[in-house]
Length: 449
Image: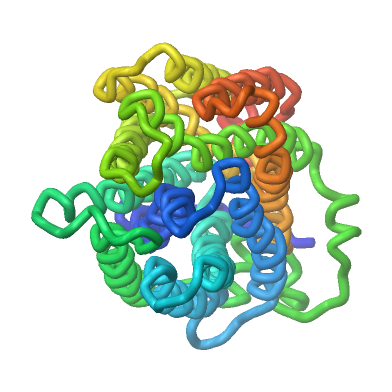
């Protein structure tokens, strides 16, 4: 195997362009995260069954992202290596975003509307995963070890900026006069039009990505990563099982941290709407105006979380020791989750969600920085696809057990947010087991981190 060439730094605008499309993808993801429980509750789902709808998104992710990773490692054509998968995923996502919020508007019975919504959600999350993965891989492909922390922090910033738009869209549209109430079983126009707006922005971001990103051709990629140019981009036989057996230790130790973190956020996405409606508005009636107002406020709280993440994403690169800032971020998030039990004022909850945003920023930036630094260049996409299992599996477990845990906690959805805080604290402890390694001869400065 060849030694990698000296890897020149990229300009800030180059790093920005590599991840800018993530802004549009994350708007779609934020709209899904903030509104799925609201949509299915409006369609008639029981609170104890809500978590089951959340099994589908991570299940599709664990199936789709390894396939995209493996396939894109071996794709070299005039459109690029990763970008073709971005285009296909984005086009499907746009179509489904126009259909999903209309699940209750086609005159279907409750069961039919649920099935339609479930299928639409399956396609939406499949396509979002397909569009999201290329941006993580592009940083691994094209950025040197010294700049990966900055590159993933920029990605975290853009991700949270997109989240901000997605979370705030329903309440902004309500403010300008679009209806936030609807007949029983029908999703309000404020939510439906938010999905339309997100779809339009996603298409524009994808066009921008195709204009500004130039992926490395095989020979240049081989020199950059020190891999054999004779095999770069070839369809050589390999197995995912072998890759897992040969995975660096960071793959597994960071994966343990991921388990606790993503289970925590699955609980947040699933139960915040019910928790806020009960604690602040004093209602469990999904058809009530108060419940829909709570739904809008959840978007506001998630937007506050995104603001906290944007701010914290600028702080993270200033810490030379990845583990220190990782632990600090997760502990701040744990405090944020647990504090929701004691803050019944909707404005004081801003404090809680700003702290939760610190954990979210770290989860978006640090795992991929640590992992990609430990990888060699020949199977980055495949490993990132497999690593997505550490995001999806905990969500599947949490979704499958959510109803049972809620029952054990007396049906109080606010306690599920406290459980999320405990999980983040366990994740902070798990960070202590991470040992950072480098797969492509880093500089002395990096070794000393």
